[in-house]
Amino acid sequence: MTLLESVPNVSEGRDPGVIESIAQALRQRGRVLDIHSDADHHRSVFTVVAGADDLVGALLEGIARAAELIDLRHHDGIHPRIGASDVVPIVPIGDSGMELARDVALTLGQRVGAELGLPVFLYGTSGGGKRPAFFRHGGPAELQRRIDTGEVRPAFGPARLDPRAGGVLIGARPLLIAFNIDLSTGDLEDANAIALAVRESGGGMPGVQALGLLLRDSGRVQVSLNVIDVSAAPLVEVVGRVRDLAALRGVEVGPSELVGLIPEAAVAPAAALGLPDLPDAKVLERRLYPGSPSTEGTAGE
Image (cartoon, rainbow, N blue to C red; front, side, top):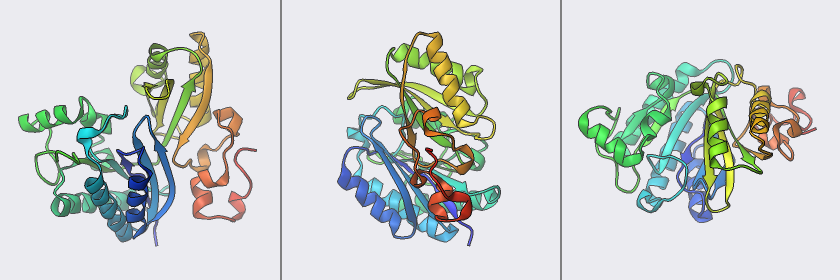
């Protein structure tokens, strides 16, 4: 059986009961490898693996549970979003499987639209290469305006965002790494400048997306990264580039944070990534195939 990964990002990061209820829904048909929750982002990221049919079933249950329990009208997290189940990527594991991932994304999108009545927007290789930011810009109200004017149309489901649950972004995409780097000194202006200089769209590193964020509750300033091409931009080099850019501004870099799991190909000594450690439990292949000769040892050594 060919395994696929999904990393649904859900707009709830503060209520343990809601987060666990969504995890239980996902576990009905899938294997949940990791849950990463953040109160400032008000967001949880679940890492789920299963075969194609079970993955569709697991994600449908998880999206339904999130729509039942999350009300975006009372959401105040700093992370951009358009839905309770904001983005649901389907990711092939290994060098093949993208065609299967696309099929699963389309099947899931059709079922979410038909059975849950939520508008579904396709992104990644399922949506002509569009990225989530294309839909999130301006928030749900701006997205609804664009739908009303015909600029954007849901691929499945109604043409109205659900008042409570919004819509869902679904797409097949290659594996990416979500990674945050705190700044010990400096401010949001520094974080934004570093993010602009490191991200591909600002002339920085290929395959890197970045934002500067101020975490209101904790007061931390952060450079939030998505490495969407792990071969073009090795994570250790991305971290090094952020450190260099910070140093040029006289800013000290603090600890890093891995969101979800990291692929074996991106593993580096924990200190080089700014992490306190990097145990096997945070490496995708080591979770999938524990004890195999190629996955013995600890990444943080």
